[in-house]
Image: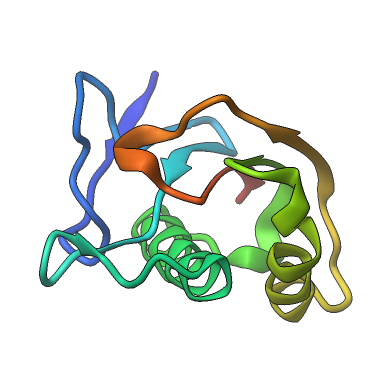
Length: 125
């Protein structure tokens, strides 16, 4: 069985996918980009501010699934420019202080809507 997770507190899917899927005790969150769900627009073009918004969106989706960032076991970070890794990583470290998940970080040729950063995650509930 799989349960589709959806919340108004994060941007709606901009394609044929769900914000997250919950199956058993696992939650698979689709990649979040820095869209403010209230405006439908990016918060800024700055990777630090974009990363903060991505985490707000991930937290909202996880909450809708009955989870928090503490439940995250794996993330994948996509960056438009690996030169912005340190700025993204500073924000990332603020959200995963003690309970650090496994992570992969890759540079993508292009992200949806030309975002600077996108993050997806898997959580256990």
